[in-house]
Length: 221
Ligand SMILES: Cc1cc2nc3c(=O)[nH]c(=O)nc-3n(C[C@H](O)[C@H](O)[C@H](O)COP(=O)(O)OP(=O)(O)OC[C@H]3O[C@@H](n4cnc5c(N)ncnc54)[C@H](O)[C@@H]3O)c2cc1C
Image (tube, rainbow, N blue to C red; front, side, top):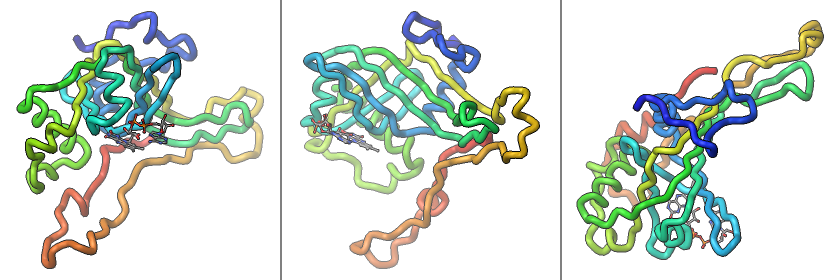
């Protein structure tokens, strides 16, 4: 299906025109980001924990230590809400009230399943690595059995999903357009700085292209 079906939980009530249910667009947002916030309730206490993620087809993977309280709680099959936010710019309006931000964000509801099969787990970890730094996996030592055992990988189906997107210039009240104050956009994006070699690195190792040219797929406002 090319669009996500709306549910009670994923129907936007506020500024519904900014709602996006198109699968391709949702996937673009998820593929550009790699940090999510995982929300869940444990013992009546809500938690929202930041973590990394990767997407493979219609699933999100999150991973971490067997000791992680978050992952151990999620794998019991409780409801989870995962959000991803990309900030594209600040929107400077002529009135304080109409200032805004350009963004693309995704909210996913569901329940995770645990990936136990060692081969599937390894594939998921490779997907994870390639999602964050394409090309890195083939260069490094892969996880050994003990490291695989020590890692939990969870999979969240992308079934109940919404995106919300704001683009474009400020939307001011008509009478304010005559105001002499500057208005417009300050675009923002995640950029990589120059890589810094580990002081303990073996001499003569070349800087790989995926490190020197690292970037996330960006977009303009
Ligand atoms: C950018 C980023 C990427 C990360 N990627 C991963 C990942 O891929 N896998 C992974 O397992 N973890 C990752 N983490 C760490 C993650 O946020 C948790 O700290 C970790 O998963 C331990 O979870 P826990 O539930 O066992 O924490 P616990 O130690 O049980 O949490 C106890 C309390 O500590 C505090 N706490 C925990 N984590 C944080 C935090 N990040 N910031 C502030 N307070 C905190 C909260 O008050 C929480 O209630 C990432 C964090 C960041 C910021």
